[in-house]
Amino acid sequence: MLVAVRASHEHLDLGVLDALTRNSEQLPRELSAPGAPLDGMVVLSTCNRLELYLDAERFHDAVDHAMAAVSRTSGLAEQEVRQLFEAAMGTEVAQHLYEVTAGLRSVVMGESEVAGQVRAAFTEALEQGTTTPMLNDLFQEGLRQAKRVSSSTRLGAAGRTGAAVALDRAIEVLEVPLAEASVLVIGTGSYARLVVAELARRGVQDVSVFSSTGRATDFAASHGVRAVQDDGLAAAAAGADLVVAASGHGQVLLHAEHLSDARPRVILDLALHSDLDAAVRELEGVRVIGLADLADDIEDAGQLAAAREILTEGVDRFVSRQETRKLDPAVTALRGRVAEALDQEIQEIRERYSEDVAADMERRLQRIASRVLHLPTARARELARAGAADQYVEAIHTLFGIDLGEPEERSTLAVPGDKAPVELRG
Image (cartoon, rainbow, N blue to C red; front, side, top):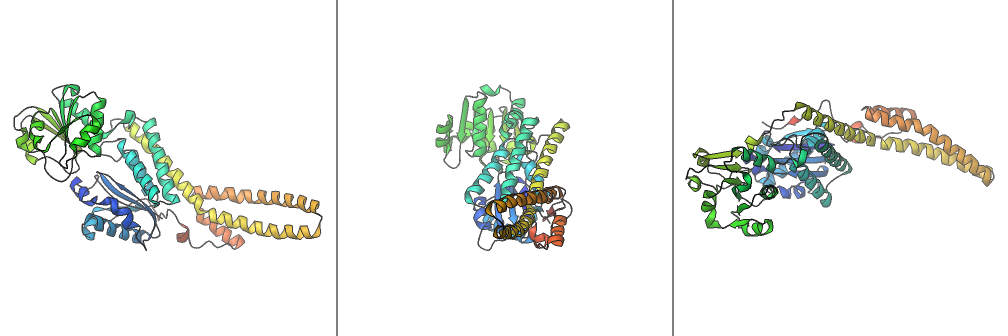
């Protein structure tokens, strides 16, 4: 059964997400503890979301297990964790993941970083051995469709990234050309790396970096920028035209007194947990652009509709394959029953006729069996695609006495009714 539990910027404050994702690298181990009601899992943890994709035996057992695991890793009370997540199962899980992967659920619509994050999460799960054939198919199809969206629509065109969009917004209000600006980057994490790379791509020469964790020197050496030492932040901020705050370690690093000279400057506040003193936003001459300001409505509704159509095709392909695989045991059992009867008949033929005659009759019987089995095999695929797999199994049971168990024992997607998520929020 395909299950997901999700928490994201779409319904949570970024500070809450910061608390939820604390120690999230430990979740695979917690989720795969002995006795866990799961066959597999993939953990997607980024600055904007924590989503657990599960191949589970039972829905509620899987959700309870996941909530307890997040409670242990984050240090939050389990009841509080339950109020922050939503849960879903079946095809709605695939639809959501594919929209996430294609950037349709990002702060910056169509950003390309998230596809890399999804790929990294899936690759890590593969390496840790926590995936299943269903999860492999789910993620591989999602990554394929995200690539189609990027290449077939203007969403994600030309490597559209959150860092690029943020700098585009900064350019709109900077009083100097970006290439001539003095830029201070606060932080050395993944977002800071993206920003520095984008600045280099745009020809910005005057870039310095500060880190509260002492990593500025190594980061600067590997990225060709200047390091700001612990006692140099105030001077670096005072001399910057553009400050990119992307540390997010949960502490205020940039204070109002650092920028009290009323000099025009732009600050991109891109950290999950803001690095800015609240008073910075009130300073004269300072323009702060935060993550919420980067929410980008697509003017061309046709592009968004085209993207969703591509993703829906991907979901249909995934569901069709899973439904077809549900019938594999039925088709295998039917073929086995025919093969068993065929073997008995051939054995009797070999005992009664010469080797040449027996071989000829065996070939003829094999061809007849193949023709007879072709139609029920093809029909199985058609019924699976139409969502009528259970009818096929019932027919096999009625006609041949082949019992494959109850429907819930065979289910992989297990979608009871519509695709609406099961809400856990209070």
